[in-house]
Image 1 (tube, one colour):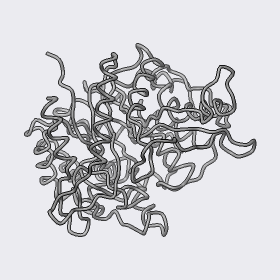
Image 2 (cartoon, rainbow, N blue to C red):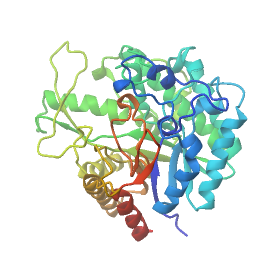
Image 3 (cartoon, one colour):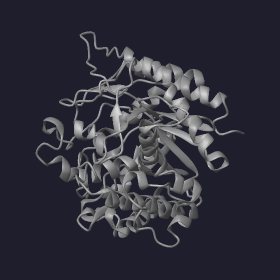
Length: 443
């Protein structure tokens, strides 16, 4: 009997849970970063978010109404192991234990993510992802979570979008922990994140569980188009593709880092004997988070990064200003197959969605036609890739409820369910009904 395709939605603990100081949870890097003046747009606070920690039963009922057969959520590391490495907080694991049981009672497959950017602040104060010890602490935490939930949860995501965490959080400083390291330091952070994945995957597999690594992927196109002789824009596109699409995938699927010289480094620092052997082949699945393709331009010598970014002409954009190009998802899925061949494990589209300035109308409806069109196009792209032989086994909409969108606070609404963040009232949007009907038809 074949495994059913997973139709789901995704969320992240820090973006929905709230209850940041309850039941033994300790601060994360995002707690500290969000408290900095100017770090989050208009000073929005994540203290309550969607109050999912208290309203999780209501949210599980929404999942049941939606008819999905999978739910991707993340476990808050500082809720489970408050110091980052050491004793477990039983109340933290109790929360996820209840959530898993409630999902399974409704025949919804739990797909937990172990790290969705909320590093315990105690580890950051010891050097964070710049230190190898953080990778080992992550593996220990993964083992503790698996020991509690692994009898009911067979597939786990280790890291979510490590590229975004490494670059936005450690190079650009616009996400937690707000660091601005030079390129070698960022690449060392990247290696420690991959090492953490490899170590955690070994812990999961030793317990008979599967490990999935989720990356953000974007097909890259040179602004000047592709020519037989190449050119500055094509060179820039190759450099960006190395950073965005290969840095966190090549080591897992080929056992080697790509050439990073175009990024301004001779090699990835911090790699020790045996590291790549541990990382290679460590994924039983690859999560594909896709939002848009990237158009890249060359930069002038001495400009810092070897690439700049250009607009994609002639396409609509989301409320975030991101171009809407559904065929880019099909292109990216097929590119992964071409690039890695038989080394590529099954794929799961673990995030795909869009933000728009939704509002509840006087009749109580949220008419989000643009979101329906966006999702319809991207679901079609996934199905087209499958028809062409791609082994895609799941599709997850980002996200269930309008939530705390990191440095954007509550300004970007990605949810199928509108949340009034003053009252926590939840109002399913028209896209909720559309996705419900699509899932019912496909299942």
